Image (cartoon, rainbow, N blue to C red; front, side):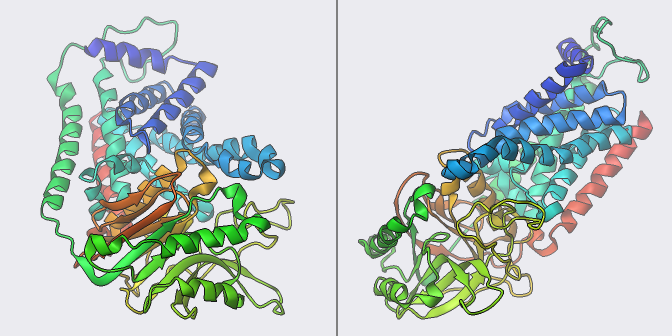
Length: 540
């Protein structure tokens, strides 16, 4: 059996030229199958050992970087292909950008995986050390990807475990970063089964005969068995945590989440705006299933991102119509654009959340602070002759950052719009802690693709990390109520119109470890992993 691994490793390391780069890209694309919605996690046992073996054949630092870059290119093209669907919502204007957007975005994101593999090569780690170093460098690359140039921490490797409520409990301690680190270590560990008696300075070339492989050595299995035991331990810890989990509901609070399922290419058509508003009003005032579910009618209704496609601050008639279907004594929270008065110069617009009471009075606003480059604003607009993809001629302005909203009859909450929820450690105001997270979004941009599933999986991890329930209202899939352990209480899937009537879960009584210390936990994991890698290098 060991000989099979050894021969595979030798042949992978011996690849050169386009075969080497193609193999790296294929392995990267294969790894994307482990992510939502497929969750084919065993493919990682092929992708990451293959990457290790390819790196074993790297002769120069630039070769190591290129291997990681090609791996990342395949991985991100397969993982974020849905960017093309966002552009095709207005194919006449933006269709020409599809290949540039998908390949360009993937090529930029692949730089981070390129630096990860370069780091492994530069460390000169051997044996177990190179596997640990790959996991450390990969996770560091994910962290950088989430922060550099406004950040894009989409499809972090730890998200693969969103398939299991039990496994994601680790995020309460280490954040998703710890899950990513563990995933890469465990997935890459089978590469160690091929470590044979070849001298470390022997060059690998395609004209040499593959080694027969080492004899069966149970010590060689030890790292793989330790990796498997680590996964078992994480599962056991998660099961223990969930076994003692008791989540109460907030008294006297009942929510109705409205999911209208409006196609993105219809959303901003002037002749359809009235019909869109009427659809939201009708779903809001429909039969209150809440009476049968938990004994009370909805106290607050939540509409998705830009559900009200006009400036509510200046539209008293629209506010009056919304007030007519607002629960008495309660309110409606909706996504809507917000703007300065027409006579104010320079004029600004924001992608916002607005709360209204049953008289149509504005109770509070929140402005999105983490804007999507090219989607909501154009970076370096004076240089780039491009329009933003979202509706309107003005770039959106950024809000001041995470904040906590307080509304009558509701626990304080942290509002987040669209992909603001994918940023670990940056979803609440730590100086004014909330009791739950509200995420309104419009995943209609992604069509019937993996995008909405990936977005929702990331949102659930924020609930576990912060120990806060998450309420999510989407234009189309996936609207849901999630408890502070990341478990889905109620949901409405992709491509469906309807409502969710649900109580609001209570937050955990104390901070999670990750909620208290944030990314300092990641730094501690890096020091621990680096010590293991260095010790392995010294032994080698």
